[in-house]
Amino acid sequence: MQENIFGINEQFKNESGNYEDSLRLKLHRALSWLNEAERQKENTDLCFIFLWISFNAVYADELNSLGDRSGASEFLRKVCKLDKARELYSLVWNNFSGNIRIFLNNKFTFQPFWDEQNNSAAKKNWEAGFQNENKRAFKAIADQNTSTTLNILFKRLYTLRNQILHGGASFNSSVNTAQKKEACTFLLNILPAIIKIIMDNHTEDWGKPYYPVIKE
Image 1 (tube, one colour):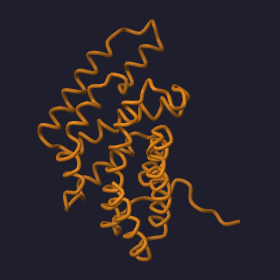
Image 2 (image 1 turned 180 degrees about the horizontal axis):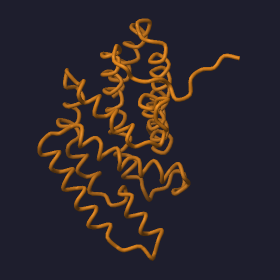
Image 3 (image 1 turned 60 degrees about the vertical axis):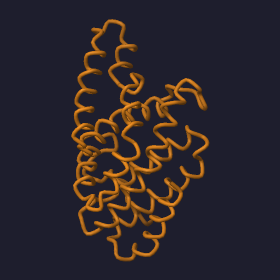
Image 4 (image 1 turned 135 degrees about the vertical axis):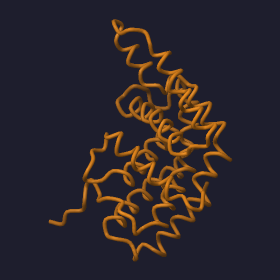
């Protein structure tokens, strides 16, 4: 984990002079939060928050809003397509396929479950949706379809993100410890791989920063 993060920091340091200004800024921001997440990995709340900010920094651009799930989905599809060295592929299938299955089987990361808890009048059908989405996810896992698997997984991670950032959990709460640990371990490995793919393909259009630097 530390080696992966050290490696991409060194690559950025050595190569960033060749990047477009907009990409250099996005990666600088992403790495700053990723590095802090690594330092805070013993505190899963802070680590997860910093990791999510790092992810936002690399995927969001001026053409989509930060909460735009379609923007994140398209970004993940693009990264998977450009994974020529199969580093992301190897991480997902050789290192984390079991962890991904555990995370997907957890109903507490499935947003419709919470939607029904918050609306007692709602039709109780979250279980059917949960089973259907998991069937799709497990088929993608069986087919080693990295893009679809990551998109479904990040959708579940987004629910955990909402729970924490919107005040749906206490700081250092033991209630969702398992989900946070799995999420942090996964993202601390996956994000460096994603950033490396971006740096290896820096001539691609990765969009412009959602909040550019404005000099007064």
